[in-house]
Length: 196
Image (cartoon, rainbow, N blue to C red):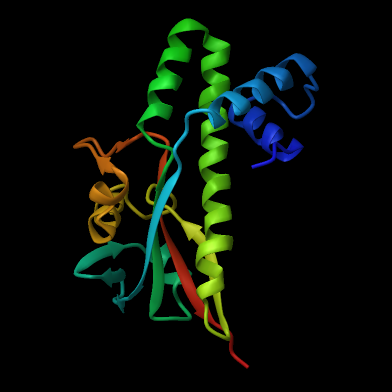
């Protein structure tokens, strides 16, 4: 992945650096940590296309209930959706923790770069792996992750279970609903059909 100005800007935003703060030194720190991240991250992703049933309070996929009016709106024009789970791997978490212990700024920068990179990886994955498989007239909604809107973090457990993501990419959820590895994402993507 080529390092763009947008990625650097996004990482600085995660670091809570004001857009007006045009600090070349901070940009250099971020750029260096993106390069460092590339040396050890192991991005992996699994996904599946599923039929679902609707209720007044959410949708049901493979026997798992996703209670969310937001997800209902997301999937309002179809009875199918995609589930997705992605991670940058355990080594990424270890390197971030080590960096945070050695230098607060470097640790913050690496953590922020990893947050940007998991999103960038998923966007590229959807573009290259999911979109080409769409049928004529189908389109994808934006992705919607547990913890956003009214979709509970509990939904991550169901997405991981349905996709068998623990076995396939080493992704799991703790009792406190933290994903392991931390730099991971689960999501629902609505599958709409264009009305001619």
